[in-house]
Every structure is written in C-alpha cells, then in structure tokens.
Length: 358
Image 1 (cartoon, helix red, strand yellow):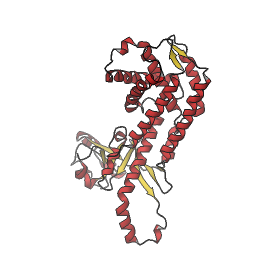
Image 2: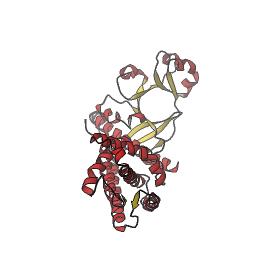
Image 3: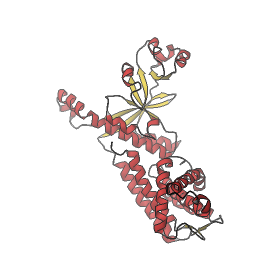
C-alpha cells in the first residue's frame, strides 16, 4: 500500500522541526554541555527524539499555540517520553539521570521547535504573532538558572523565521496539491446528536449534458473508483487540518458506493476514529465484522421491529421511525440509534472557518 497522506505529512514535519531545532540549539544552550559539543553531534540526537515525538504526539496538545509557555507545559511530558525512548534505542537509558541538565535542554529545544511549527501553521496559525511570542518565550526561559539564552542573537533569530516563512510556503503547497477546481467534497450535517457529517463528492465534467447517457453511465462506472480515492484523500486532509487546529474533530460518514481497496486510506491511526462507513440496511450482513472501520447502518424503512432483530450496531433512522422506536429495548440489544436531522452542506473551507470562530 502507498504511504498514507498522514505519514507523508509527518515525514515533512520531522524535517521542519529538526530544521528549527538545529537553529534554536544556537539560541538556547547550557553553560556547560557534556552531551554534545557541536551541531553535527546534536543533529542525530534531535532527529531521533523528533522522529518519535512526531510519530506519537504531533497532533496532540496544540491548543495553547498563542501562549508558548502553556504550550511547553502541555507538551513537555510527551517530549520527555520521546527523549527516554531515544535513550532506550541507543542503549543509554542512564543518560536520563547522568545528563539531567542536557535532557532538560533537549526537552526545551524540541518543545520550542514544535511550538514554532504549530503556531505558524498555514491553517489557522499566525507568523507575526509567533515571532513576537517567541521573544517572550526566550525571556521566560532566561529566568531559569540552568539555561543560557541568546535572545538578542539577531542572526539566528532571522535565520529561524526565514525558515518558518519558507516552510509555511511549502506546507501551503502540500495542502494545495489536493485542491482542484473540478472537484471537492461537501459535508452535510446529518445528525446533531451525535454530530455526524455525511461526505459527498462533487465533480464537474465539461459538456456532460451533450454526451450520450449510455456513455456517461459507462464512464462513471469506469472512473468511480478513482473519484472515490480522491474523495477519501480530501477527507483525510480535512481531518488532519481539524487535528492541527486542535478543536473538536468531527465524525464523517462515508457512503458505501462499492467495495474498494481505497478505503484503506481511511483505515489508519488518527483518521479511523473520525470516520464511519454509512451502510444501507440491506447490506448490513455484507459489512458486519468484515471491515476495520466502524459502520453506521442506514435504515430507511418504517418497521421498527426490523431493527430489533439485530444487535450490537449503530443505526441511522429517519425522524418518524425514531419516534416509534422503543429506545430502552434497543439499548438492551446494544443498538445505538441516531436520529437523522439534515442540516446544511459545507465545504472544507467552511468547516475550518467554523472552527476558527469557535
């Protein structure tokens, strides 16, 4: 299977955060450092720690991007764990005790590099505010007795934020790669409790109205798998953006159009908890226990008794059917009932904008 979009993004983030860390290491130091003496010795240490941190914690604890001190407090444990895992990997677990000051320095550098990255992200970050807050952070860190801070080192500060500018442009290119004026996803609110959005892929074909209906049908059949892949990739991008913004991440229902290996791109950590397959009731047996993704079964009939013949599943029903159901009986059978309540259809940009305003 091709490397997932999430893993490709993480690979880029590892390089970015390492770039920042190598510059910050020249700004935040110790009076006496016995773990490394030069940049070439620092790089493999930082690289190993960042590799573990990004793989396991990058999308966590990003709420306080406007307060770098709080951001460091939120993430320090994750970075310490990443340092310990690195020490374990190089068979030097004793370093956590024998190199306490250096370990503290490492945690500060990695946390600070991660802060700069997330605070200046291209989705809802702010370059100017990050630059200003970075100076405040350095002054805060200068109050510690252990660290030596060169917060007036203009050369390295300029170098750092030149790199930030460059990486913001690269990140914009990464996300823009998936945009195309000919297609996009729409996300329709389909339930308020819980909050579920149904995914719908919209694509345009020039002069479609002039084509033979039979050819259109054949064309749709041939190209549907490819369009589904695009739709799923766009959904992955949106969920990633929601995690970066660190708001409540929505749950998206993906209609089952056909059995497709492209569903694999949704069956990955980070994404799969926020995606469920929307399966027609008549296909329930086809999908029960045959996919790693969670399913919501869409019942459009009017016989509540039919639902009570099943157990251990989640069912989306229309309002009139919901009103007729014995919810207590459903609960005994471990059947979760979701009432369909249609709302507006939103684009990715609209959903992100809503989150910025929260």
